[in-house]
Amino acid sequence: MKKTFYIFSSGDFRRKDNTLYFETEQGERRFIPVEDTAEIMVFGEVAINKRFLEFLSQKEIVLHYFNHHGYYMGSFYPREHLNSGYMTLKQAEHYLDQEKRLTIARLLVEGAAKNILRVLKYYSARGKQVEEQIESIQKLLPAVGECHETAALMAIEGNMREHYYRAFDEIIGLPDFIFEARSRRPPKNYLNTLISFGNSLLYTICLSEIYRTHLDPRIGYLHTTNFRRFTLNLDLAEIFKPVIVDRVIFTLLGRKMITADDFERGTEGILMKDKAKRSFVEQLEEKLKTTISHREIGRPVSYRRLIRLELYKLEKHLMGEKKYEPFVATW
Image (cartoon, rainbow, N blue to C red):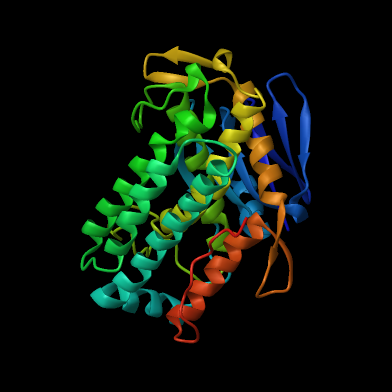
């Protein structure tokens, strides 16, 4: 699998013949292994030029931008090399047909809920008092199949996550990282800052994986397709947030790899320092490389590969070959 290249410093991207490199303001150079790079994530202040973008397009490398606060800003999404008019029509068909759209949206929410329950049961088996949250989510699960509009489905999904997030204080057990309530832009505490940062990273990773399929990222099913640039990556991320992002956060805090000292308060809320961002992406990359046994394939696959496989399953569903079944963790 190709890798992700992260940039936290400020400087310039440059192309030299058939290679790319990043030069920091101090004159240090980091060469980018273009044949092994799937995406570049930029957190620093960088300068680019047309030659650089042309080369990214040629090498099919996606470029993602984040602002000073770690919020996703946008992407350079090279011309889709696997673009398929047939698949786009199939995606649109399943979106415009209310029942077909609801079928996919319900499955996405069910997959997310079951992975949330897997995480909670994992910690319950290790002595964490989260039975109340498990019971509340299990009671809500049957209502997913009874929803007849996506707005109601989103409301149920939000309700389940509310119960889920209430278990975080018990799982983490650190006074500096109390959850309180889900808050975004700006996050109101350290834990919400970590969740927002991790989710942003996962949205862009999902977007990069969509680029390597025949699917159009602008047509989602749970999230409404409108003037927002991309929605399918948001749909896909719902399934993997509990088993990738949240588990990474629990590991980072449990091992004291990120502490309260790794944050600062700015005019627009709480910021993660670069050291914390680096720790987060290192742990995230470790998680994405981790392999689990896959019953259908009959061999171990990485979490990053699981994201791609989820997209292939969706393609088969859209073409009428096989009904989509969301990934549910078995550990």
